[in-house]
Every structure is written in structure tokens, then in C-alpha cells.
Image (cartoon, rainbow, N blue to C red; front, side, top):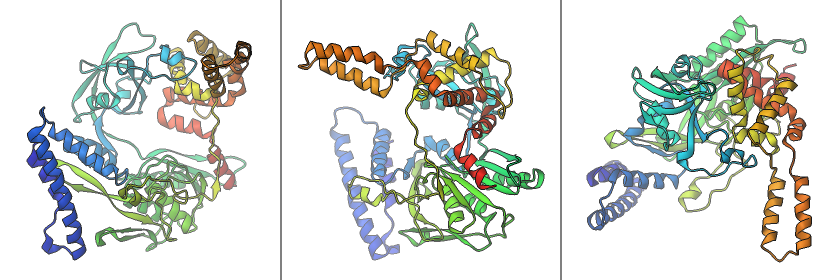
Length: 546
């Protein structure tokens, strides 16, 4: 990218003055002054700097640094990142349909050091397939969770970052990618050919009808993952099936972890339950084009269907529009935790040379007039430190405490012991019971403990870690030897036996380990069904349906 390209990119901010108001002309003059400063600095550096400059990299760095000072959602996408933008807006990408992850190889020192993660060199990290999606090319080609990806099209993954491996896996639909894999229990690495497809993630992650003697009516449940193109239709189809074919007369909508997306898709979903011509959300911004009122357009098909919506701290943007509007209009009871508080509206604008910029143009306001936004990013433009405003987001009608204690399950999870044992379990068992019935036995938990022993796992609590650090400090300070010996003698008392720790947390260990195992056999939908059995928010919602 040469200097003319840089100047062309920056000149997009300049608009002919004859079409602008006095305030807009003043703003444009300030922008022009800043652009002149930038281009002159770049020119001076270009002429005088000792080495050759990478203009493309410099320009992207400058733009990204500028946008970070505004808010986290105003982002520049150069042409080379077009597929990331496409995935964000449509939920589609050309690839193999599997989540990948990097971590130290099983049994490495970094994994076994008292159950704690330690910093490792990038070249020592291995890349794994951790979540092949059911029905997608990777799963159909036989890729399994736990397979190590040794190379992609002959290129070793050693030293590659996750994004670099991902970029090699993605490509034009219809093209072939060859993976070299290593699998536990298979003597030699083997290769699989996978034809890339246009991957579309189903926004309805899972839905089901629940019947029980304790429930007066059948309750429908829909886990909704993202507001991408066509997602409202997918939601409507799932609801129709629950209502007309499975007899659901109450509905639980799960928006936990849903980061949002297209506002019109959110509007269509709300319109299923709310009268026509009802204001759902209003946007207010700097320009007249940014100010808009979104109203329902159709008569509701489920006007009287009782609703409960599950939300959490990761429910954001369009999720907050749906949950907040339904709450404001008295159409739904919300259960969970306060939502994220992302009430900023972005529009995608084209820029020169095939790039795009996603710009925050306005804020969301709900029917009651409350603003969803939790952070005042205008302070960032003044150079002030951003502080979380806890008044933002949507507060549920019933708040469920999501505080979690730090115990052995965290150590087992963060160091991939649950994942690795599930891989081993899958190799040794051809099948398991249905997700709604699968339960690990005490004998299997004992096998898990023996396997941890073989792997050299030791468990260190934060308390014992702190105490060990204190002893190390004491050895270098003016502490008499008698006191130091007493401290050292007490240290074993704070180092728990991992088997006893597992016994104390047996329900949680069984749940999390079972969750990993169910994923191996029944993929994402089966895992969702299994998780609901242990889900406090879901069970509270069922109680509210009685």
C-alpha cells in the first residue's frame, strides 16, 4: 500500500463543504487538519526513515489505534478480512465446520505443574480439533474432538497461531483441504481430505418440549444463539413445531451467551408476541439518518403465549432489545443475570480498495425510554479512563446468583484434563446412554482419578499457592530458622488430596466431565440437552411455569 492509498483512505472523512451545515463544516475542518498532520508525518518518515516501510501495516495500525480510542465496536475491515465481516453479518463462512484450540501437549510439564497453567513457548503448542459441528464437512470426514492437527495442506501447524491455522482451514467453498491428524489409540498420523463448504451456523442451537407431572402444560424451550440473516425465520419455525406438533403452551427463550446481531431479526422475533405498530426500540445518534423508531409490522401469531426469557452477562445488543422490549411491554418474565449493556448501533460503510468500516452511529432506547448502553464511550474520546456503569444492561425480574467458587473443577478444566479424559473415554466406549439419561458411575469417576494419578496431576489451591509463595519470601527475609521450619511443617496441611477434593465436589465434576463426554457422541444438540439437567436458571423457569 503506497502513500496515495493512505491519503485516499483518510480523505474519505472529507465531504464537499457546499453540502454541509456550519457545524459539519467546522467538524470537517478539524478532521482535515488532523489528516494533514498524519500525512505529513508519514511523508517525513517515508523520506527519512532508515529502512523501507510497510505502508499497509502502518496504515492498519494507525486506523486500529484511532478506533480503539472510540469504542470496542467501531472496527476497520481491510479487504483481506472480508470473510470475517461476512461471518459476522450472515453467520456463514467457507470452511470445514470445527472449532480448533491450541494448548500444551497432554502430559507436558506446563499441564502437570501442580494443576496450574504456565507460560509456554508458541512452538511447543499443539493444535486440536475440539468441537466438530454435527453434519458439517469435518465431522462427515471423520474428524473427532481430540484429534491433533499436525499439518494443513502439507504445512506444519508448529509455530502457527490459532488464527493462522484457522485461515488455512478456511477458503473458497468447493475447494479441498488435506489435514494430517494424530489420534489417541491410532499408531500413526493419518490424512483426511475435506471439501470446504459455505458453513452456516444454525441460530437455533437446540429446542425441545418438556412434559412432566409437575407441569400443568407442556413447556417449549428454544436456545437461540445469534441474530444473523434468516435467524428470525429459524426461530419461528422452531416455535411453530413446538406449538403445533409438540403441544407447547408456554415458552422459555434462552438468550444466554447471545451477543446480538441484526436488529431487524430481533424486531421480527418480538413481533411474534407483540401487537402490530408497537414501538420496540429507538435509535438516537448525531445525524438524522441515525435517528429511527423500530415498530412491529405484523399481527402477532403468539399474542397470548406465556413467555420466560433467560439472560446472562453475555446477552448483548439484539438480545437486550428482545428481552428488554418484552420486559417493558409486560410480555415476558426475565430470569438470570444483568445483561452486558451493549446499546450501541453499528453500520457497515464501504471504504476505498475493498475495505469496510463498522461505525457506531447511535444508541438503543427501549419502549420505557431506558438506554441499554452500560458505558459512556464519549469519555474515551476525551482521554478519560472508562468505568463500568452498573446501571446499564437489562436487570432480570428474577436474579439468579452466578457466582462460582474456585475449586478443583477449575483446575481440571483449565488444564484440559476433562477434555483429554473424554477423548480417552470415547476411544474405549462405542456408545453411551441418551443425553437425558447419561450419568457417570462411581467406578468411572474412580477410573478418572487413577488416570489423573498416572498423568502426575497434583492439586494446588490458591491458599496453598499463597502459602508456598510466603515461605519462599520468608527464606530470603530476616525470619528465624525455627519459625521458618514451623511454616514448612504446616505447608502439607494446606495441600489438598485431589481425590478428596473430587469427592467433595463430586456433582460438579460428574456434570462437567459428563458434558465433555456427551459432546463426543451427540455433538452440540446432545450437549445442550444434557446441560439443561443441571441448569439452575432453566429449572427456575420451569418452576415459574407451574
